[in-house]
Image 1 (cartoon, rainbow, N blue to C red):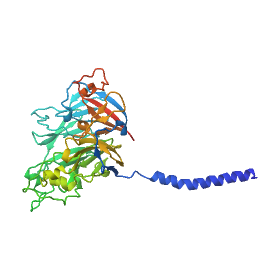
Image 2 (image 1 turned 180 degrees about the horizontal axis):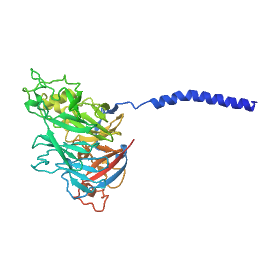
Image 3 (image 1 turned 45 degrees about the vertical axis):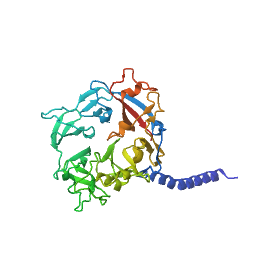
Length: 422
């Protein structure tokens, strides 16, 4: 039998040994950081008529009704985002500001020829927002410049869209007093003159994928190298190439801004436009068109037989839960074009041309993200929510019902909040 003193001593020794053996393990666990980049594996993805479910990436769903004080055009021509105070901005040929509750506040832009007015804003996805300092750059194609407006609609001046090399810049976002931009994909000879070699070989993406310019010093601080610039197919004639339209996918994810060049498989993110880290790397299907093939398409160095033999990854939307993607098969794109979701470090099995099955509530049986987020730069996330627009008439189709009694079929689209899974 142990004495009471020996028992106490034994307990203290065992406690000390346990502490010594567990502390290093605990410290090691706490020091393990998330392994970036995450992988999105599309190597075996196949088309399916069975849609994925919302519960694969979302925990809950909510709805915000936008007032009809200003009627919005077709949803295909809309983009949306929220500021620090949850005010909602809907971009089209103008920029409409709504309160967090969905009440229309104001139109930010004045359309016209006068001072402080926009002559011609062509596209839905052209405005570059600074959500930290509450202003936006808006391109005016009638004057070939950018106009700057506060998010309260105050005109703050304008500046030339063309840089010193006579290239037209397209701004994507402004963070930390730095502007992130790329050059427009134009077919005119002047744009390609520095990208085509003497033997008629070209890489239309150029030596750099995107740039960062410091607003305060008016100097370019960062150029993202195109690691595949050495790939230069032959052009039919010197200076000829197709217009790819939108070479970048990008969007906001909480405090991060992410972007991906349309022809490349890495999605980058940044908090400050100073450090860009790889966020996701896409593992392609063996038959997916690689970078060389995509560039050959741009300079018309492929046949239709070549085109029909490939799989194509289109626009993506990156989130903390994973990546939404558009996908198609070249030989049967009409029947095998659709979209899907792959969780981070996951392996995608299928994609579908049917909307995601809503297994979260009873209002909207399918949620179609085709026009909502996968056309253009429309993926906006804030505080763990993904925001999606849905046409009002979708709530009046078979199996659906409106979430608001005052909603009618020709109302403005409804803003949907999906809480993404951690």
